Length: 531
Ligand code: TRP
Image 1 (cartoon, rainbow, N blue to C red):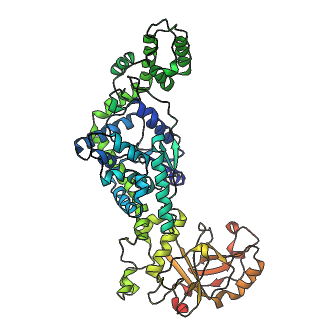
Image 2: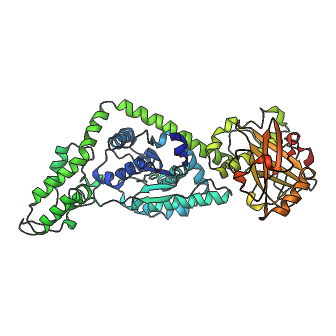
Image 3: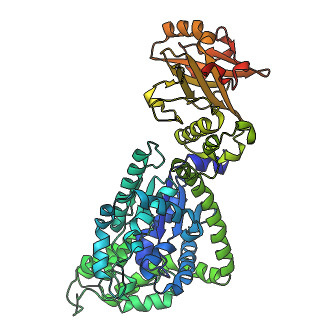
């Protein structure tokens, strides 16, 4: 299997970070280290991006450092082991589909959903000195939903604070899918990062806004000095007093960075007051250095040629945009925003002959990368808009001019002359010997069977009952379940239809031993039996 086909079958993971500049040890332990693990497990198709548009939701008044911070984050990611050969590493704003999907989601998202997200009110109250009573800030989690759903990601590795955002994402996915009766968006799950809490040098949570951080790619000398001056949580003022490493910021560093031996040794030394704090800190600094030294070196090297990193981000963003565009084509088509004229042509009385061969789907090759239900939905829609002759109206409900096939309903279409028509699309993976259809064992006046071949050509067989009635009756008798299995197969340029031998797995069916094939070559695209 090539890398690419393999990647397709893997579940997708997506996460992002706002560009707040160089990362600190808390960011590393809380997210990045875990991302690198996910990437290196080779179990996921990974997308990691820098959420520069999200940065603008709070920093719109001074955007002067967005690009610098974006690059700073990217350099730290690469230095820490994110690998563009294995993951797609990109910049959110370079993939304009994020903004497009966000806009479209804004149409269907009730205001109350956004007002109720807990981080909204919290930040509105806590972030001082910025006017956050803006539309963009309210929409922050909706932009995040667009980020995730654009790639139809199944897993989102984030910390506790992001759970509410992923929950909103699930709600938006559900609403879109049910509103338009198409399962475009899977509901993603949080992959909660198992992160040891990291305390900053002053004993508060490590955070840029407190100025108490230790940088991930900081030089070991500077990091070491900070650690030696670090708070011990007010403990062991006299070194003869024992301490509790669970209450000590240095203890947290050991838990995150030290080997279990060093952890055991320092914890014992602390509790028995046999190890002085400065030695304990020295050991913590060494443990941190063991992890960050290669990251520091790698970053130094990357900084000497930042153009390469920028070029990489641009190329990776273009690659992400290709995947994003697949989703957007489904979304635009559902919202009647697709780029082709499609069904509108028939309002102007234009015949099919005016356009290029309507059965040629080769310009829609990207449909073949989608999950089969979505792919079928697009092809069905395409068929009813572009292939079905415009003077034939198949209806289900009185006012529905353009039908879509809803397999689960198994409800026939009705023609103007009140004929009952089954229109169905090949559901299984293409069998080695032909295309396999499951057909409800009910009676219809006409079947329309759709399938496509290797050349992306749509084949539409319009088969009146008299062509298959006899074999159908036989198959119905033999059928144990309520479906009839039908194969279409091509041999020496002729198309044949046969009823699959039902006693056997259709996947193994050998078409040559099916009885009485019916030659349906001349029924290709012949819609007169519907009139
Ligand atoms: N809101 C996230 C944070 O502050 C960043 C983010 C933006 C994100 N879009 C995302 C995370 C999509 C995961 C998935 O950390």
